[in-house]
Image 1 (cartoon, one colour):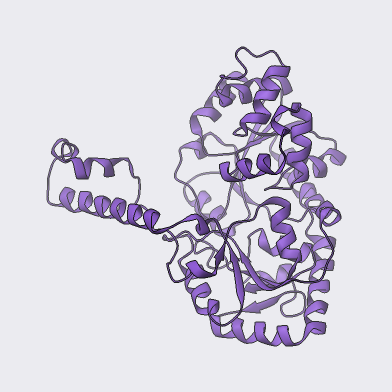
Image 2: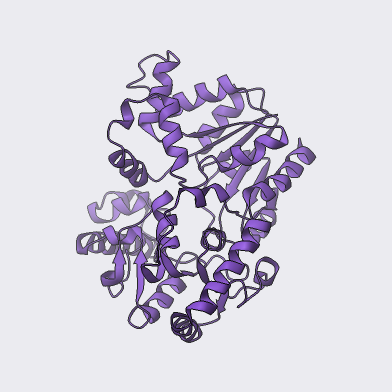
Length: 403
């Protein structure tokens, strides 16, 4: 069975990857993809590696990586490979591969509609959503929406969309690519800090409570924000609120769109979010992705996990398996289903509030032997039960049931 997975990457990650590999953009598509997959960003080639033994032929496209995609376009004689739209290249790749199953890990509804119209071989379209569900029309064009978050699965079902739960996993090959060296970081946190409802308001409060006391090192894209970004976000938020207030007063759209200050707010679907809390800024280091991220986790005595606000009940994010998988002690927030995944305080360390988290972190810093025993037990559990190979068996059953 042919399965093609299409997705996008953070543009900042793509830029960093090519900076780390000078001349990579001049290599062939296959050579670029080998480097890209080896760096283990996102899911990289995990599903390809896991599904191939089950009888699948898998292709994985990151369609917003221009250097790699244009190399493919040139090698396959597409017209104007240097100037052609990246989505057109992706469509050509999909048509050439002739998939039975399309895994559309994106929110571009127009692109998905074109793929379904132009590639008749597709019998099943899968989608993916995390715990925060993006606003998009794409969901109505997907046959089965997969999610690591039970909350999102229920939300999708409540809105009439077919959805199923599939946990994240760990790719064990990553351990062969990491440097095994003494721990250089006492306590780390890696992740986004988006200041908005359903995102990371609780995470922000937790980190603020810990930052001054727990010697924590925070790695986040929020490190790039400065006072200018903060001021711009405040202006956008103010314009949005002014627009809403004037609408409630009964002013017409035509009139509001004629006001220079207000009309710019019409392009926002929701209140613009503010950048990171200024009090956390001194503790934040630049973000790490791919193997750099895994190495930071491996170099940490402990790594903190804080689920997004959109996951109030269930443990579901990637950090659960990434941290335990590389053999680092995971400190994670209590969730109702956590004992189904790991034995609390034996395979991972759990907390219910900032005070308990700080108390356990301090104890573990002073008790290296016990900390390493927990880390080892967590790693054994992940390598035994939470790998992509194990998840692939579940995914295979879902596909065969629906196709």
